[in-house]
Amino acid sequence: MVGTVGGRLSTIDLRRGAPVGFLIGALAASLIFGMVQLANDPVLFFQTLMKSLGLGSVYALIALGFVLIFKATQTVNFAQGALAATGALFLAFLVQKRSVFSEGQSVVERDGHIPFTNISNPLDSLGGPQWVHWSLSVIVALAFAAVVGLVVERLAIRPMIGEPLFSVAVITLGLEIMFRVFNNDAVEIELRPIGVPWEISGFKVGGALINWSFVAAMVAAAVAFISVYFFYRSRLGIAMRAVAFDQEAAMAQGINVGRVFAIAWAAGAVLAAVGGIFATQPPVEQTISVDQGTANIAFRALPAVILGGLDSVTGALLGGLIVGVAEIYAGQYAAGHTSWLGAGYPLIVPYVVMIIGLLVRPYGLFGTPEIERV
Image (cartoon, rainbow, N blue to C red):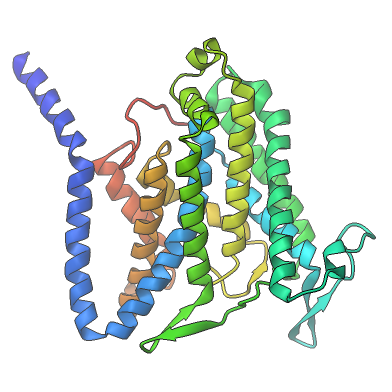
């Protein structure tokens, strides 16, 4: 009996130290590998590093949206990918451009009005440089995403307060299918360019070509995580953390749980839209357009969410970066072995990393052991 209890305690102690050991081991292996590759080809190594950080930032943005909604509602939002595509598609509607195929070539032309309406885009009448118009369009698109999140929460999520979490998760899965079908019908076989000012251009640093989209994604992720950091220290943020800890106790203290749910879903939808916008750009895609595969960014980011922990903001950031670095470096330095790895092996790498992480820490590197998951 004593031996059994001692074995269980040692297992608990081992798992408590597992995140640190896992990170130290991964960091040590990465440093050794990095030093070797850096010595062989510094330019290629730095270019790959920036590309991996750009992809990791996109994953971190999507993961942060998952975490905010889960912390507030204890629900895994399976509609995150569809919300990402919806926000990016609305931005494409605002810039009023589309790619049509004429004689085998893709030609970008203007619609002249917002799709599905006869209303001209009022932003077109504003003067100034193109990046100003695009920035204003992004703000409007993110506001639209927030409204979508609020509507979804009010109509589909709030009535389910106190109901089984499995039922709520299934509702989000249904929302995913609904939004995805709508987005696919809107895109059809066309490409919907989002009109980013930097397009696919970049700049060189010591011979390494760095896309502006890499830098933009990293800046967006930094702004998002810094904003969440300060938000959680505000009065409303403290209320959200209280709801995440114990909904019934929070309600007993007079906290408006419905309001917390609404803010979490609005913020999650905005982060999904930002991730969706960057999901159309390098290093995720090269088209800079919304297509029927844009919503898949959530499934690609899922390993980052699980690896970091569904209820951890820190885990969302580090999980996204770890998965992004693993995917890009594996794609770059193992490309000579596609004969037996297969052409799509880089997309498998994040799930391999996730599985290894879960074997070490079943609830994520920074997740809370007591939470229940669907």
